[in-house]
Image 1 (cartoon, rainbow, N blue to C red):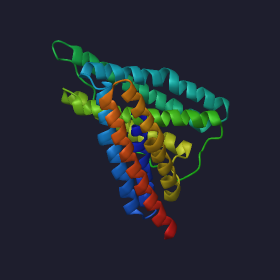
Image 2: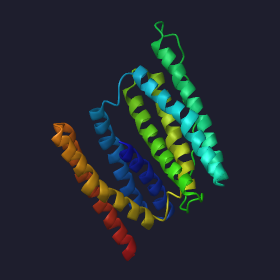
Image 3: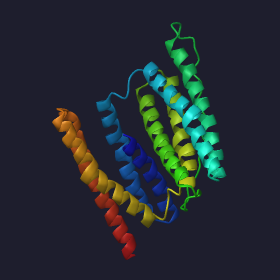
Image 4: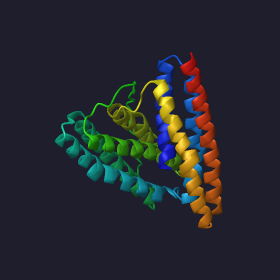
Amino acid sequence: MRGEAFANASYRLYAEQARREGLPSVARIFERAADVELNEHFPTEAKLSGQVKGDAANLRDAITGERYESRHMYPGFAREAQSTGDANAANRFTEIAGDEAKHARAFDTALRAVKSRSRSGSVPAAPVVHPVEVPAGPPMVRAQQTRENLDTALHGEALAYAKYRLYGQHAARPDVARLFRGTGEVELREHLPETARLAGLVGTTHENLTKAIAGERYESQTMYPTFAKRAEAAGDTEAARTFRHNARDEARHARSFEKARDRLSGS
């Protein structure tokens, strides 16, 4: 699920770069793959793992995640970045920690409203999103530890978006659904791009295709086949079937990306 969420988010950034380079057909290839990761693979795996529950349980899960990020993960990343001279990353981590603390408080207020017998509690409005663009560029940090922390943050923000989107789709209350969706949009369109710029996640379209091919080959040839074998051995036949299906999808994505790169290389 973590990998599928990150693939969705990174492919959408790659699609934006392809459009900046005047390559709309390549952008559409990235977007189609991103849609499969988010709308097919992620929810299927979430269902198998029992990720989605009722509004109260989903809110508790969100609170736990946001509190960890705001109290421990991002402050720790900020201290490490400051100590290695990556002041810009330290500032960004600190700012995101503050946002995540606000998210935790909003989810906590929503939980109290959901649990209220009188149903009189008010669920906070969704936070305002300030979209951030991610043009192609090298990493903007120098320490290896900062780069590793940025990678952790990128995967965490992508996963939060995918989970909150799913929680919103299954929410019993419209106001809770709006809160989940809006908070997820902040993670996807604000926090993730901010960390992506620092990490140098986006390169030229040719470079992005090369990275995507490597990722899809690994998932289709190694990761998902291994998961399928383990699931089969454990008697989890439905999970094994899902993993094999996803492996075939990822192989198709790899071929699509390869064809697009070949066309670029030949042009």
